[in-house]
Image (cartoon, rainbow, N blue to C red):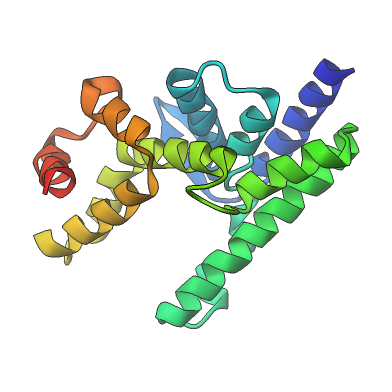
Length: 200
């Protein structure tokens, strides 16, 4: 029964992310953007925490579930609006995955655990939330930082140091050690500033 629930939940999450109208090319294949992100999260979890249980496997795959349905442009383009958007996203992702897990046949306690992690509840005290944040940070550094840099040529070094440290500080010591031990691929062009950001 548990395997049936897991397989069904994974199918539902993948189907939801496959609806993303935004596309991204990876290794010559055209992907729905959030489905690709979900796969990258799952791959990183397998590398970073291969003993993670089903709850965390589903949580990482649903980290950005249907994110395109809550665009940044729906909120004021200022700091307050940004924080409102982020808070709204966390709730949206948590509610969405909770509905899908219920459809897959999971019990309320399991659903609540996954939703709390996806909803970013109690970072630094909830080990599930911390693990999710670790994986998200590692995925960002390996797959998304270079593209983000390309979209913001106006950022100076100080701005980049702030951005990198903000992400780094959400990650655990274990994730820091994993990244610095060479287990993730840093872009050569950004490696120096990443090293500077995390060593000062």
